[in-house]
Image (cartoon, rainbow, N blue to C red; front, side, top):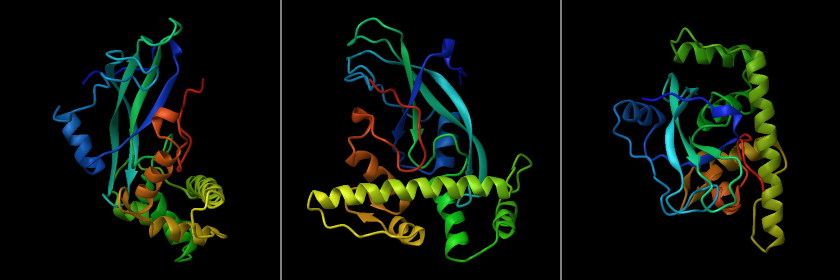
Length: 232
């Protein structure tokens, strides 16, 4: 596989990319060159032009999954927009971030939720939660500490604020929504989320939130984390 870095410091946006397999299956299929990436030939995600963007390799990032008991260096596909449908200004790149991942953080959404459940529901200490990682994942590069967990808690608080604000706005549009008050309320809402189109669980809620805000075509925000996004 070709490995590339961000060329000449150009801006790279992250697009939520829905996987139909586990993150480890995706990893091995990409390594074996069995994964079919979209071409975006009909519409470039950045400029909207046809037959515009081209895939230019990958960048790599670590993914931490308690549910799969792995720490893997995952390839993230990168594309270059040639700006065919816009004035010839600086080229832009974008990447496809698997939907179970969180921008700029190692844990998957489900792993983050496991951490939050252990903290809020099971009342485990940080030391007990850290031990859980080392018990389930035998990996020399694993580097989890109480300060790491504090970053996870802060991320979840940001997620909680996003979903509470989003549900309040939907209620103004006459959508009956559950009122969420505490972080525990948010945890159970995400854990028990169910939608006939998007499925069950926090990952499905994340996708529903993103698509309800217009998806990548509207440069919608992510529920978990903050991606690089280009805003005109």
